[in-house]
Image (tube, rainbow, N blue to C red; front, side, top):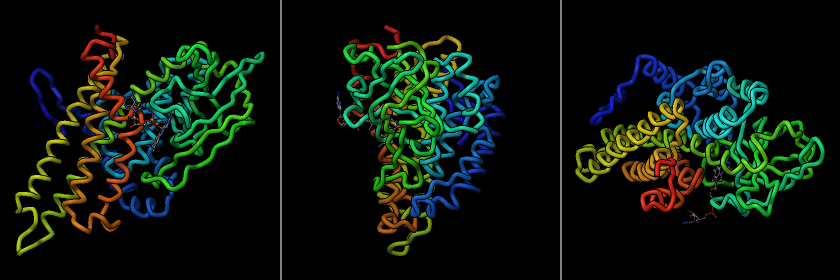
Length: 400
Ligand SMILES: Cc1cc2nc3c(=O)[nH]c(=O)nc-3n(C[C@H](O)[C@H](O)[C@H](O)COP(=O)(O)OP(=O)(O)OC[C@H]3O[C@@H](n4cnc5c(N)ncnc54)[C@H](O)[C@@H]3O)c2cc1C
């Protein structure tokens, strides 16, 4: 579970990486796994776990130490996400929106003053961040967004709605996108950091009755004449689309890494069950059809993890070169999330009817593995991006 090698690439983990992996694994086993089922059924977001994650530095893992982060590399970030989502998807989702989509974007695009004001408290976990891009009429087609931001003196007046926003009703800050020039298409989008708790005209609401991630938080953000100070604008007017795409490159990586943890959880649960459950006088693990399902999970785990680690190495290098890593991240996200859902379905199959019951965790893995195929680019959008890159119709990493 700790090292794999491919031709020309050394994927051995360092001592520090192993030690962090072990620490997070122990945390997940002690704090998340024992209550995951109970919290899921009760639709309870366990804020104590989030506080524990903050104490371990997980809410600022790849943020430099000068901004109160842990200064870790992206492969380590992947190890953290794998361990956390092995326990519960809701907490990896927090890493995705808080660290990936919000903090890393602020690190790249925020001014020094903005970093001190929002990034530092986010990196310690004193404040939580979320990401408001999707609207009722604009998901894959980001530029179709209808939210507007009109400048009036020292403030922008925001109107509109963001929907399906993870941690909307919990977060303190949201990186929100709205049109400052509606006629300019994607070039008219601007990014703002909105303080959700203290801004009149901002309202949040939870989305009830979801298919999965019951132990998490998903909601809407409503802006009704909300006045956001000009100093909360991230980048210049019209930079928003580019900033959102950069954010997605960071968030998708954590989604992919978490999906690797789902595959591992499915594999481990299935191996345990297949060794214990007997039919016709033998453990079901002795039957080739069951072995085939286990073998598929083994290979999906290794394949997905290789793509994630490879993207992690590309991201580490990109820190020095400033290169984009959209292609690597997109591949890892598409493959890992598809595999995670497939592995969860296989795990239910291995468990028979018990897999359909909340008595075993695999039904939760199946429900929770559905959303990552939709968010941060649906599988179809990733297929389109990768194909268009291969065909030369667009260049994902700016290499052509
Ligand atoms: C649990 C959950 C959490 C989320 N968290 C967040 C969050 O924190 N912040 C945020 O901003 N958003 C979030 N989202 C929203 C998510 O990013 C969007 O749902 C996603 O981008 C898809 O948009 P859509 O739902 O509008 O689907 P649509 O864009 O309407 O797509 C519908 C279908 O059409 C397909 N399709 C669309 N366009 C094309 C095309 N050009 N080619 C081929 N197929 C196409 C899609 O693949 C999909 O199958 C979350 C969603 C979920 C379910």
